[in-house]
Image (tube, rainbow, N blue to C red; front, side, top):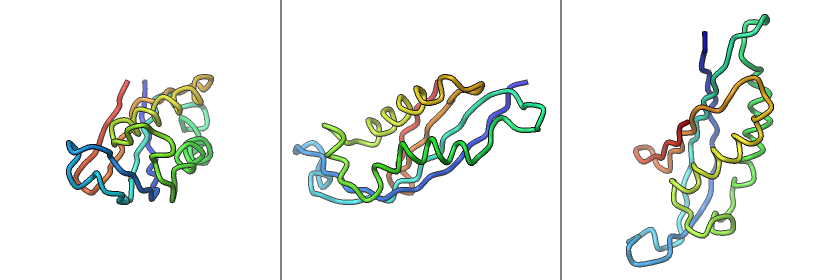
Length: 119
């Protein structure tokens, strides 16, 4: 039976969305991003899908590079949608050899605005 587990990560970053269509977001500003990743797999003989410490190391390394950075250094258009897609694609590649698979990334830019990328 497939089971899902998740892990939450938090990082602080700034960005600027260039162009009039972005309104006040055209100004340089920052966010406290909250991200949840979800993986799916079979529970093994030890009673887990994987060690949460393993997820910390892998996913923490992916989002850690964004912490206290200007996201315009990493993205042409640093919208929450583009950031979430990039994180999903990067994590999916890093987890490709594991017995479990990434099923979802949810990235909150504010308390009530988010992007979700799912398999």
